[in-house]
Length: 400
Image 1 (cartoon, rainbow, N blue to C red):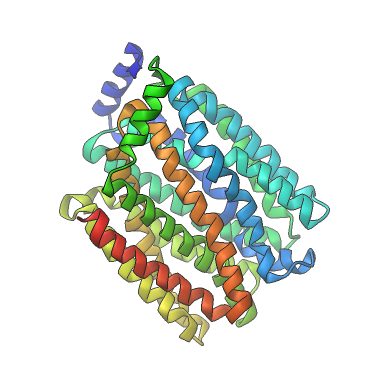
Image 2: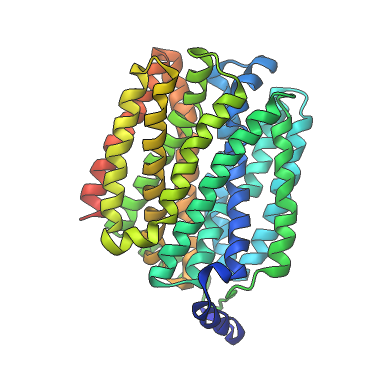
């Protein structure tokens, strides 16, 4: 792959200026905030949606699954196109589709139509979480890349913190109001089109040779371990935490969607702080050590949740979960970005996004089956098992 001379100078200029003064970084932040919006903004409203739409708690998680499934299949293809025709050519229409289909969900008349529209919204969102990380890899190197990845993880967490509170508050007026938040993706798309100054690819390599290089890079033990770590992390996040923790708060503590949203937001604020420190942490500890630490913290969180009977005691697992997220996900993404050569970085990281989407889709579905079979506590036991598996993967495949 070759990059245009003009864009090479863009990287040089970016290195010379303060990272937080780089407009490109803020464009990436906008993409990230759009990518995380699809789930976190509606999570606190899931119990209310189940009630109003007359859908069981076992099935309401399909609203998350329908959104995440398209990414399992489309993201690698979109990554290939992003390497071949450019990042903007994929990002702009994706953001528009995400915003339009997501807003249309507010007008769905029944659960079936809502699932269809969520699927279309998922098509629009399929590339966003991969290409924002790809852009960081394109624009930054070394510790600046780790710092940018941490900042981006912090912004993601701020979005994850704000959206549940905002979505939960909007749901007090009606189950469909949180979907209007996705309108924000449209101005982000316009912002990407007008302001993003990234090194677009000029790739003339034969497609067969290009795909062969991608497949060869994906075979390493470390890369497979990082993929597995992401899969397990998002089973816990989207299954145990974002789907069934709100159901626990609704069923056993009778908390409103607003209170649930605020509680989820508290965890994400801790994540935002921890992520913002990644550049400093990686100067002292290897990313593999941070991932192992996070796995141990996840394990403690999910083992403790079923035994908590006082609502105020959830403060500790919420804080611990937030810290674990803040050191885990950016560390995984930074290691993966380092493993991805720039010639096929978008395709490489798109495979990772497919893995993430798989975890997002499998988590609510699998734990929904567990919920129906053995009850709510079982969803947290399975989440704890996923945390233990993450500990093994990080100790053997990533650290090794």
